[in-house]
Image (cartoon, rainbow, N blue to C red; front, side, top):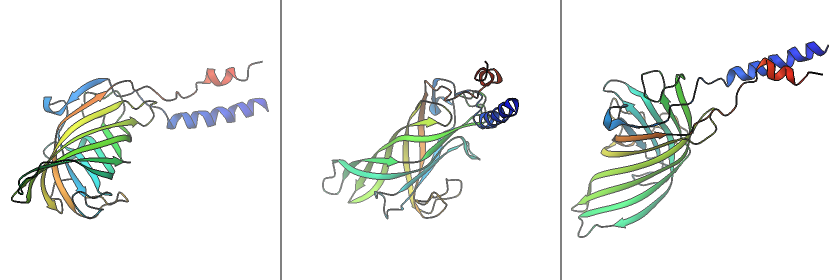
Length: 231
């Protein structure tokens, strides 16, 4: 009877352990798209809140290698929670305005099977964004917005690993408003499903810093479990 109980417990542990096996955390390093370490990208921002600077707008950014989206990295569904005017430098209809935009929620994914420099055995490294901020500079001429550049900073925790160990910065260059053209990420609604329109942009000069990831929990071994039942 005791052996039967032990076998049942071992089976449950091994099944649970199988779901949490990770080949290894992403490799520590500082990686730059501008150095060719990985692909730059493209983005859409869905105006779920109604306009270019509304809360509730949803970001969707994907790596772009010239033919395929989302190979090296993905940022999916962070949504705007605050928009704060930092500086108003528009005079006579000309100049710039700078806004700080804070996001919440969202997920990210780093590829692991396409030769990415951080790859360490897993097909991909997915996780939750734990912070995401944008500084957006709008340029005006004659009272009309003629350009917009963004500086992003973000961090995240990889699923299965115990620390928030991914940090990144990037630049965004606004290209247009309306429905995203072909070969740009799909517009996503506040429910993170396809839909809506907004603006689209290129995502450039990404730097990813990966440091300190560690395995959150190791699956129990036969020896570990058996030691619990030794007399």
